[in-house]
Length: 128
Image 1: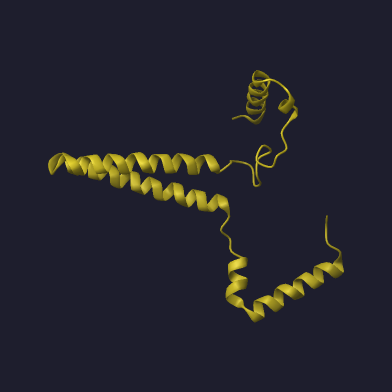
Image 2 (image 1 turned 60 degrees about the horizontal axis):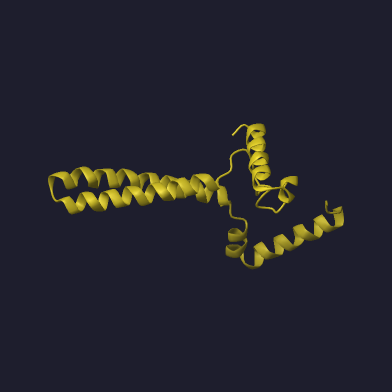
């Protein structure tokens, strides 16, 4: 539902007043950090942690075996973090998925196999 011209002007005046009164708050509210960028950043940091874990694994072979074990644990944890962050970022979709939004397709009344088949069809249609 679109705003009328009067409502749009009122909203712009309110935004300008907020920016004049508290510019720090206005900047925070205008922030460009979307969940997608945060998840990408988390995945990138996990990738760097994975590389550090690999370095520790190799260095531990020469120094002490405990360093290798710690490196492996870091690699494992960073992989889990990266995969979960990657899965949360839905490609080609800005908003929440239909399932997250509670808008299930007609398969909610069917059996378990019907639901699985419906999911399979949706994935094939979406090209995943």
